[in-house]
Length: 111
Length: 113
Image 1 (tube, rainbow over the protein chains, first blue to last red):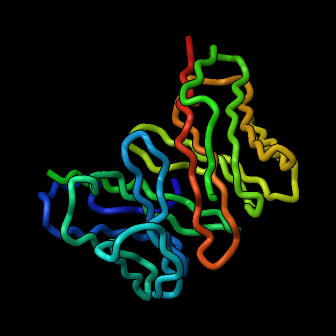
Image 2: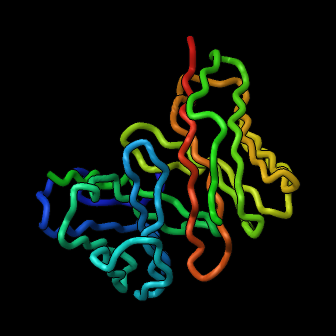
Image 3: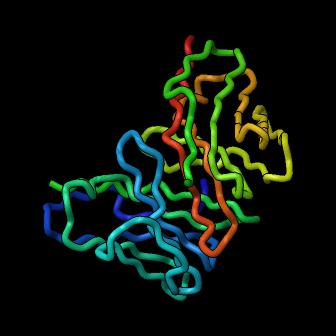
């Protein structure tokens, strides 16, 4: 086990709604990244937070936003949900050396 | 451009045989390559990594080979077991500001009894 946890495990929303996903690590680290994984695809980088500030961003619109807290837990917020936002959302944190370890993910379904 | 691709989407291997999963990458600036295993309903699990200044690295039952000349990466799994059934992703990282991981689409490894 990586010690990286995510909540909730599954979530169903409707178009136009907003959602907040959460991530935490047993041994906190100052870097957390979020990825979106559509069915049958590899994960796609959304953004990374370092010391509570956004440190890099992939090709995702501004309605995808995040927060990192002093205890290194993190949130991913998505506004104005679209059907194509249905995916597995993964967070990753660095636990040793430079390796990013992933949580189990949150499965989001947008109807 | 940045891309990591895989040659085969599905690989079927007899239990006990060795598995070889191949991957091509296009970014010659990549510093670091990782193989992840993803089982159904779970997040990607780190298997093994290799730095760009190496050409081979061995772990427990797994070996990663890196050929920078042809931008090719492979994962070898010795004595494949039923528990090895999963989707395998190669991924690359350019060590810069955000160290984002660039994943390929994945290869599904199917173990035949």
